[in-house]
Amino acid sequence: MSNVDPITRTQAVIAHGDGSYAIEQIDLLPPQDDEILVEIKAAGICHTDWDSIQNWDGPFVVGHEGAGVVRAVGPGVQRFNIGDHVVLNWAIACGHCAMCDDGLFPLCETSSPANGDGKSGLPRPEATTRSGAPINSSFNLGTMANFSMVKEAACQHLQDGVPFEVGAIMGCGVMTGFGSVVNAAKVSAGASVAVIGCGGIGLNVIQAAAISGADPIFGIDISPERLEQARKFGATQTILSDRDDPTLASVKDAVFAATGRGADFAFECTAIPELGAAPLALIRHGGTAVQVSGIEQVIPFDCSLFEWDKTYINPLYGQCNPERDFARLQDLYLSGDLKLDDMITKTYALDQLETAFADMLAGRLAKGVIRLDQRDPA
Image (cartoon, rainbow, N blue to C red; front, top):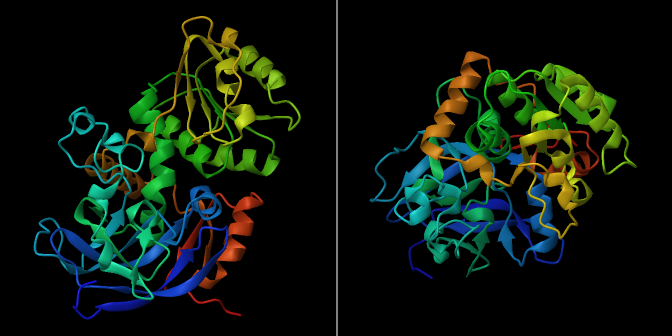
């Protein structure tokens, strides 16, 4: 560990690697090279955070959606100054490998957590410590903390007029849903779109489809309340599905009756393994099924669902190009086309995280956000 005195001692949510977590103290040294110290103002709450707490080796700082203020910069930082507002993204690409050359930055061969060891996107191990020992951060970000040390490539400017809460949810959930429609599937005006699951990811798929000019847009869910939300975000028709029908047979009948041949595109946004093949059943011959939610379990496929000439894709992070896409998302938000204020169901203090996770797991949230300057009134 460096003998430089810590610049910041702060609170952070620490996952222990056994399914438990707690708010503990961490220390952060002054940034070096291309490192940036960010004061986190808001952190999104995502199913990935819960899954990482349950399944990843610990200890590590939790959180991968965040926005805040630059408080210190290393001498190699070129694009940011102290006081800048930033949104964080976890696609910390090197910019010069084969994947980056192809514009597939989330698949970077040297720095993405999805491909390679992720160490190129990692600040110095000794830059963040807990009880004197280096501690990792979720996706090299660790946003459920008052301060985080990140690489410059993890930051994009947050425009005037974009609240920190909105910037935080752009960092993963909004980008994943929007990018799956616009970047990966390339939905065009007049295309028919079916969206299975109208939670936070599904609502972003729906509004991205609406922005793209798709029509009709089917919102599909087991919850009447979520279907009502889906209409507010751009669904032109809604279909109440049956929890006990993983093949979505009745949903398929409704989609085919409305379109005459099946949807051009269908998006799975539930993270339920049994529904992994479901979007294939809803599309026409030559249509495109998109698995957005990141199912990783082994699931059986009826190969006849691929008939004929259907395409099934599983894009990562909406094929995010951070410099291009975060500016685009903010422009759409500021124009009123991308409805993100309404997507934030509730904000919480850091010490209300247990309640926030319970609300998320119970399906009570489109999107929840931790405000790091908020305090639990209790």
